[in-house]
Length: 147
Image (tube, rainbow, N blue to C red):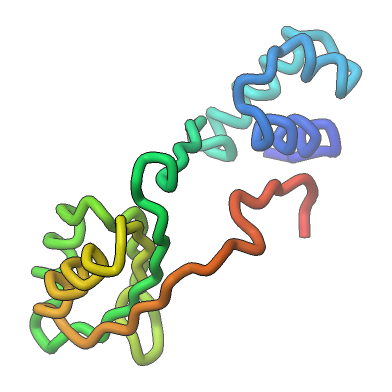
């Protein structure tokens, strides 16, 4: 599917506010609401738009500390770790890596004691490196044109 300038504008606006009314999108791109709806549907069907999300403030829910944790998994533990990590509620992302470390995880904790507990549960599977997120320079980047 070809993504033209109008589709990029639609994508940009939906990333900023997925609940934007069709009439507002249509006005911004100079098309009718049905035409914009058709373009959105085509991008959904093509898998370009995968889903729509609600952003939750974990800080306000009592989880103010963001962490990145890498792990060098012990020999023979990879499959067990992959199943285990799916059950850890503090971890929101887990990615396989190339290089020294096997996995990179992102998560949240309430306080240093909670982090210590999380690390203890993960360390069963290998050697950890944990970093606290001080602040985010870029998060939820809006893609509004090709690069």
